[in-house]
Image 1 (spheres, rainbow, N blue to C red):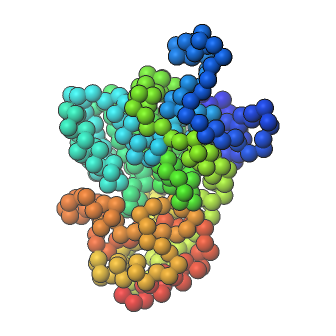
Image 2: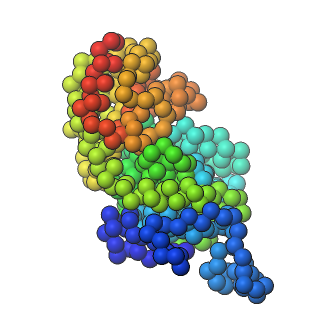
Length: 395
């Protein structure tokens, strides 16, 4: 089903878009926790399978609760259509696999989450798909790679974990000139602070597990694009391979969207306050945050993002030993590879999220053994600063 709530302002859409009450007139969205649906007669079932009516057939194809979440997110993103997936990685994989064929070519930013890198670097080549990585921050490398035909461009911006940005509008122009669709993983920016479709991207993917759920409860993902791409490529793949989101998870996600802007605004403001504090700390030689004047791509951040995001990445003195000391001595902040949570989380990318990369690949991305990624939560930022100072003091 398509999104028809584009007239709503963002916060209203997060609460009201996609709402479809049952005959019981419930206030909160109903949870249709079922796998199948029944038909009044055989002719109605036949028409449903022919696509001649809007009947739900099977929850792998679509479900009323999942539709609420999909339409709500599509309204926020400004997309024609959204399909929810079981995980963020299911969204990434399906967005690529649904339209790529052997003999085609993919160009991707080198700065990718470990599992995304594995898909592009390991899985796609097994299917006879040529892949090429570039430095996403370097437009000359994009231009060289897209000087010959390509079929897909894949990137994340800001990147995980170093928060590097890709000039989405510039790369979109190159991608389209090369005949490629551009797919953007927009998780770190959230649909609130960056609009890849408005910047020229063709497809946007999310791990809804992150900010969209925002409380560390449910796995989920989403793919958003125009009607043509979804109907021609994505939906047939989706229906027949089964990466669908469960109705329960969709219900949780739909309710979480109601508070997304409130949560992310606090987290973004707190992340900048913490980044500014850490930038002055003698044991933190590097702080990466799009809101800092020292951020190398600050002008690009101001041009294509409307907020700073919730992540702060630092490098501490002492390499791995220094990073582990900080992590082990945090009393308030939890060690976890998740992000976008109500609780502040920290991880050591070199030994967790990006541990599959070779040391030289991590070095190319700036992921040294002293790097720690912080996902700022809903706590008072002053308590977090005090916790970080205590942990850093012992290096």
